[in-house]
Length: 399
Image 1: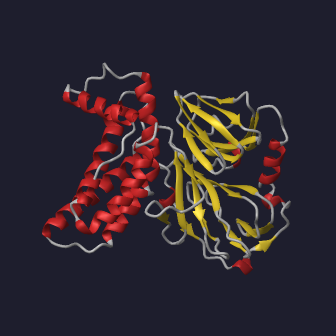
Image 2: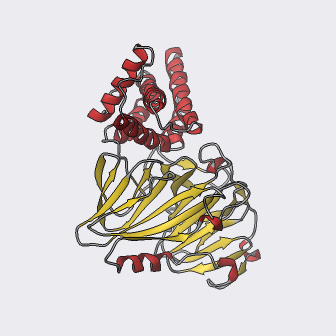
Image 3: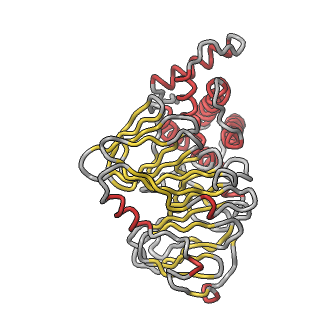
């Protein structure tokens, strides 16, 4: 079963193989190679709890026919396990991104595909796995994820909460995800994170209540709710329309993003939650997101401003999530080359350039900008281009 490879991706894999043949020489690697390898690595890293995990779970539930198939099944699961484990390793900023990180990703993806193809019961699973990988390996390196659906064999069910999570972008210490709630009355069960910080986002139409601590408040407008560590939170859907919950999660105290290993359900009946007004002190740091987006759309010039500062969620070394909004016009906008940044397009279309790679983006698209890389975006067409961006900052940098 062949893996689709864009010429840029294939050239990197060939360079990595040649380096290993020549004693891991690094003389032929350019800054362009390293930038591309880092972008591919981060795109693949998102599937630690996406396709890598989901494919392994799908395989475990397939019957095995014969001793040889059992051997191949074991090989596939080992390769998929190694791919998941890579999430704990930082993506390097030098030649190691090519000859170590990307090389390992590619080798284990091919091993998993070969083993599944040799196991007749695993072929349908292998085909779906290949489709997901091809979206990355067949791209020019600038991978974009959409939050419009829960793609099969690329999602995760959170233990104890039983909600479907779609991972969109996985950074160094934070991630942007979607809690996919297809049922009209589906909500996010109340839970908390010990060391994780979070921001819940809500887009209209809305008919429900946001939960924070021992309180709840009715929400009818788009919102962005910051959640410090150790704070019970959730969303109670009153019905009428399904409500999917995009959320950003992060922590400087976890290896990788850690969200699914830092979840504690909270058994608290809804009747025990004190209902308070939307503008009460308990929710005074909750942003009217839809209003901010409308305000940004009315601007003509490019401008970025912070909606939620990192200090709002930073506690005891966890780091804090900084959420900002930007209006970007035809003249374009360039982000600072600081920490890993995750961007979500909420209105309009634009041309994105990261390092030397470009592609068009539009509403519901999400992408990551690795630390130290130059990135710019400019508006295409007449609709105002508005984006959200989020990064995680330490105590010293969030002041």
